[in-house]
Image (tube, rainbow, N blue to C red):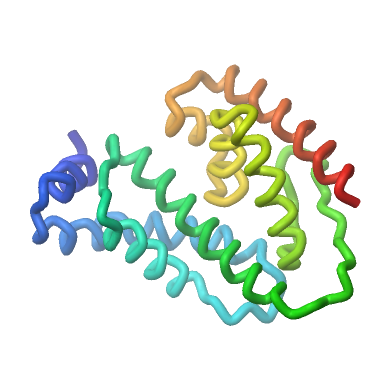
Length: 185
């Protein structure tokens, strides 16, 4: 059992001191996730990677239900928290009427790319929601690859699937999202 897994189990058991032990251990990895995600945002963002880490951590630890199955599940939850924070910020920016124009999302190459225009993030989030209804495992893989910046083998490990299966899921999810986002144009 790793230190992170042990501390997560203590938090789940109600040990409030364990919360203070967790951040120093996971901070560098959370910061790397946040830096990866923020590097893909458009220039001029007011949210910094440090703020994203802190807000995500507070959402994870401050929630009433801290039930993680180890380190991989915790980092998947952290990636999801960061995704939700960025989606919330995009919604807030998009709340002002912008003429209704939609921007194009490129789904070529090995990774989904996005210039992080708020509407693009919202379109991708809506499409991911539809994919999650159809196939939650594939949607989780996309979230880990796109929002957490995990490699295919890393995401496969977090999800508990083989790299071959993850590769098939990734190919399917990319094609599915491409079709969904194209249909919205």
